[in-house]
Length: 52
Image (tube, rainbow, N blue to C red; front, top):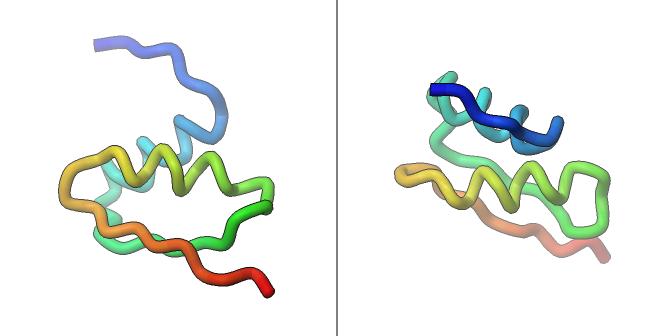
């Protein structure tokens, strides 16, 4: 199956396919979209950390 993904979506997909089970980040960084996309995959626990 082929899919057209943005760069950040592709990074999230790659992390999921590599077996990532836990991910954390903080809002407002260039990687925000990666964590948002990673959180849509079943079996991956994601959490936002405070950025202050």
